[in-house]
Length: 86
Image (cartoon, rainbow, N blue to C red; front, side, top):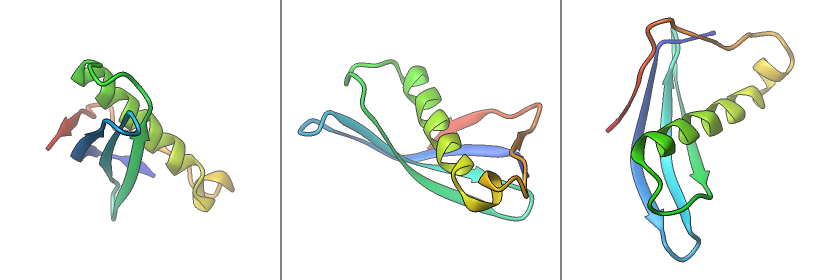
């Protein structure tokens, strides 16, 4: 499955748990998969570092889905893929 677009939205930081939270939507050929991601990192972490960490967490979650874990589908990324925060 080819990921053609990634969008990070609904970002928030919870000072009580010291966690960053966001939805990461990955667009594939015929579907959009929305993943809820949480990060444990300092509050003042740069935006780009946070965004990269959110994408890594989303990929980790995707790889745990049955279709990828079984090897029935392989996760691929478009050559001109960029991700954006909404």
